[in-house]
Length: 168
Image (cartoon, rainbow, N blue to C red; front, top):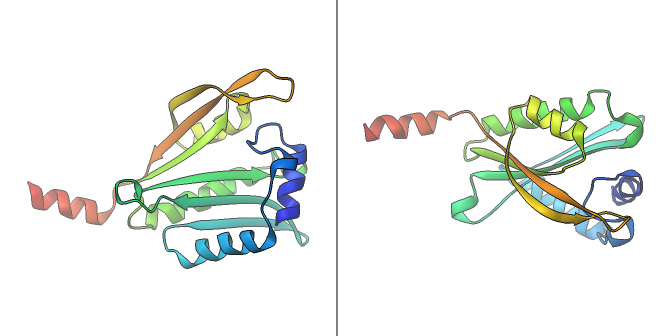
C-alpha cells in the first residue's frame, strides 16, 4: 500500500503530500488499517484490478466527544483508472456504510480548488462547500491554491428520531 501511495503522489497534482514527504512505513500502514478494521466507526476501502491496488478511500473519526459524530475522508484513484466511475462507486459504498453507522452524522473532506473532477463528484453526492482556506496549498511553481472544505450531513438515524420524539 505504501508503494501505491508513493506512486499516486508522483502522478497526482492535488494531494497535500509530495512523494518525498510521504514518510509512512509498513508498520504504520498496518497500524492504520488495523485500527480502521477494529473500530465500527472507521473504514478503509481498497479497490484492486488484477492484484494491483488502484484506489483507496480512508475514513477516520475524531475520538473527541464533541466531534465524534463526524468522519473525514480521503479518496484517491490511480491516474489510469480515473474518469471510469471508480471514485463514484467507492464514495457510494462508503456513504451506504456511513448511513448505517449509528454515531455518524456528518462527512467532511478537503479538496484542492483546481480539482474540478473531485469537486463535481462530491457535489453530485450532495456535499456542499462549507469553507475555503485561502492560499493554504503551495504549488510546485511557487503559486498558491485554496483548500476547499466540503461536508455532507447523513440521513437522520432512528435513534435521533426517537430522542426528538421524547423531547416533544
